[in-house]
Length: 435
Ligand code: AMP
Ligand code: MG
Image (cartoon, rainbow, N blue to C red; front, side, top):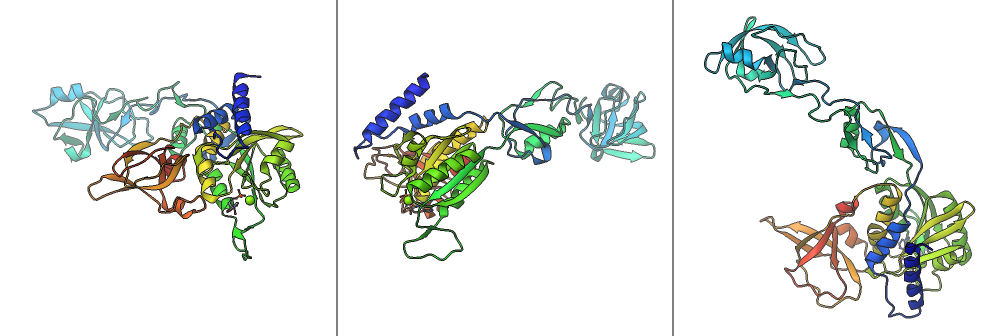
């Protein structure tokens, strides 16, 4: 047994031993994050895609430039190009009248510049041999086949040097990088038309709960809409996962077992919502234990205490499993806090953890909470530009309006009182790519 497995096993054993006791010790957030990071093995398979379709994909190998960008010295302006040393000799004070001996457009090759003459030149056109400086046309006056330069710029002005952006042999993007629009442009700028990227992570999801109906259906007594389906699909899409949505699964041990196995055969990861708590109609943990392994359960976090991580056994091996709680805000929060970094590592991405910052609290907490709390909050600025964090009035884990209203989480550690004006940790939703 490896050390990391031993650690996991100890945590799990403690956790399970405690589970008889309602006052049990919950797993610390950092321990859960560590276990999940240790368990996340990046997908190995790669594929080649056109750069046109590579946005949000994860680069599988370092990208090296085989050329200089720009490939040659070229003009940054529409104007006239000349040799600064020649012109300074033939000029009076700061102005000079010189013969225009050629015209070089973007895409032309140009010819060696005759001594003490200029060439008409346009933005992006190559600087000819024998020239080193461009004067913008606004500072010149054309007089037939001559040009009067009113203000002579410093030698080397308005020239973009070969390789000033990228040098041949430079690594322009690293393996593990999540490709954004500007990265695709960068790859194109060195002539790359296809990229080797990681295969998209397949995530199979289903939703437990006999009370669930889909939007569009009529609600009967005791029924609610399956909002988690849409939150979870959206969250997974924000990570560019391929989602296999198996819909609602009936609240029974047999159906849950069956669904877990089916899902595990289709995907790299299975995720569910609901059925992970201690009620008789919560079948996920039992189903997992009967055909897999319950890795961890119950975390010191609010909302989202009954978060589950484990493995499902199937014909082709083991598939990791994340059981999110049922409450809609718990799904949102535990996905952001725990599932997201796990998925990112599994995708082979080197994306850094979300950044937080300290900001003044516009609220107070007068009663200590036993769990670490990710409160749905808004960061706003007053007229003087001062930032202040406020909380949604109802922090219930079923109150999804709080997540929709908020633009981030205010993190309040367990057993902490907060006064107005205290500095508190704020994590913008944009840090989870859901801003
Ligand atoms: P559970 O953990 O299954 O007991 O669910 C906890 C709470 O979340 C219950 O009030 C459920 O009705 C609710 N819930 C479970 N699944 C969903 C879902 N897919 N969409 C909205 N609410 C849900
Ligand atoms: Mg349920």
